[in-house]
Length: 166
Image (cartoon, rainbow, N blue to C red; front, side):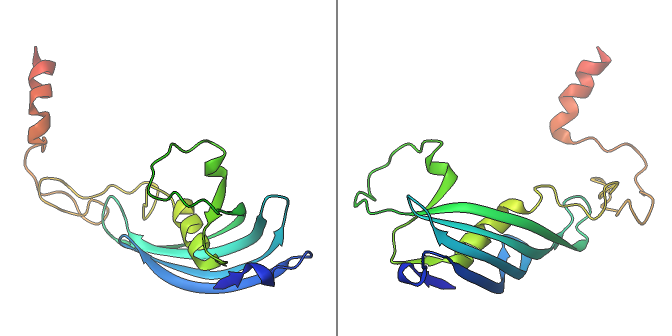
């Protein structure tokens, strides 16, 4: 959804959008974003509620899980008129607190996509007590008992077992 700067009046502009997208191995559906964008001293302020769902594989057992979320998004948007896009420069903490827009419009869906991907939990589990997959035989420990006869030790950690025995 493109919002041109001239569309945003002093009393603000109502925003209502929904879409879906893929992010890494997750399917994300923004079921609804409803909010307002209005001008402030240095730029524009976006304030609204986003309701979204994420469908992705559990990080421990790979079972596909879908969960829903509802969060408030508030952020500042400023127009960046600088010409030096080739030169690298260190970002300050103030630079991280708002979005810089170089075009003549604001791509609302792109901003919401970025915010939603940041809101998605980093550790994606089917349930809190997920036991995962046995590294030796590959059994889903939530559904079946492991068929391994001995404790599986990652070969990279075998050295630590020798230290423990000393």
